[in-house]
View 1 (cartoon, rainbow, N blue to C red):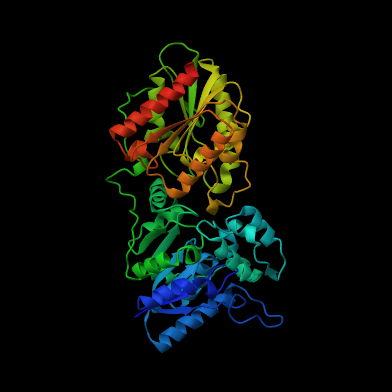
View 2: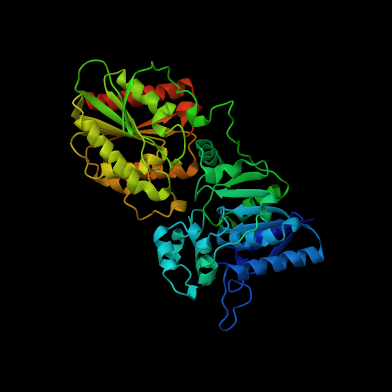
Length: 501
């Protein structure tokens, strides 16, 4: 028999699992709860310090009890903060554990406290500044700082708030300690796509070369997706139970490790057969020049990310960027690619500065018409567009974006950042915007695009939407179809028409 040990996240306890546990039991599984001290388990004693080690011991005790009682196949499920005591306990009882399920939870590492996984950077600072004691549970409207509430009914959100308990600070501040034994235990990740990336996005990140994600391509690691926010046990308990049953049997999708015999998705050929064209390289910027003396209008292509600092080739040499740059150069505009420093979600300030500096260098080039420039953003570079939507300069004749992220995703913890195009579009004025939308976009990114279009319509912004039928995120190297090629031709034509008009 499979025995699920369910470990809840911050501020919550066994009560959140009620409906999911009932469905698991109906499927013939045994369910145990790890009631963590101070969070639905025993209350802390007078003067007792409750820290991560306390909660690790709580989970170990449940594992030992299952082993003594039934000897069933144990599947440890950790949600949110709960993955930290789960990994700590599994590291000590690795031979007793059949599988660990990360339920919309990160990949904690030895020596790193749970606080590092809190998405909101300002919240991390607030917690770190507290000396000791407990962290009060969130108010009803503050739960999004800890994860997306997408899919939660009003009643579920009321219940989550009413039953929340203070989180002992030591559980967030004490580093996790692992010997490495837990690495032998098979792992399943359940990704809640209303809160963060799905499997396809993870695959792309692995292929780009993010060293932190390389281990996810191991054959012992599987993934499932749930189209909901951060609390699936409350928003879709039946679907979660079905997913956990499948996970226990070893099901799920696997990521593919980089294969030297086949280029990763972002390094496959550009979907158009664009003639080669010489480039001029200066610093972090490449210029693809059209024929004739100029001055010519220019299109600056801004790559997405985050991209690991050690990724090679760097984005300005990726086929999508070079393909677009050569294509516009063949039609009379300077094509510009650049590398910027978006290596982590905390780097948007650096990346925006790199883009602004590159634009000024391009405009200063005598072969460029400084009064006719377009900016074209891709994917995770989309948030940088907010700076240019906010009171756009007269020389910016068009802003384009392909499959862009147009608002910080819930798991990013950047809700109050200035890099928020949905909010900035109200100040775009008459700036023409060309938005290329992939039909098979991931749910979390598609939601930001729809928010942007709604806000753009409300403020009568000049937006032209070009849809890519059956296209995916990064379709230029993934989907070389006639429909995708037509979309590229339309998008390039729309941008150049605004530059030359």
